[in-house]
Image (cartoon, rainbow, N blue to C red; front, side, top):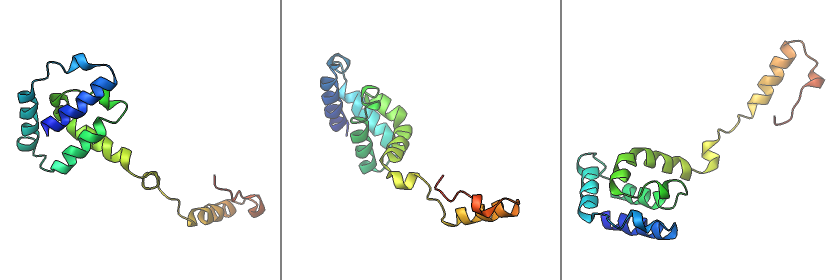
Length: 124
């Protein structure tokens, strides 16, 4: 995992012309951070870790802010949540309106003594 992450970060650094930030990357320390993520932080889903790596290194904001395994581990929970919310289909994020909502609003409108013909049946 550490090597995979390093290769992805290296590509980002080259793309963003930030190679100087990873020149001194200590592969042993990076491997240790991923070991800690699995053993100490109890993140056993390696597919999730890989998905977060892929997402972090492609997200416009995070790809230039997470350039080390330590930062990745420190932010892992936040990154996983942001990845999931960013990759959810927009239809699931927006609650669908109940078709009965307009009818209920109409009933209230009439009960308040308003003219039924003046009720706005539009979507808003």
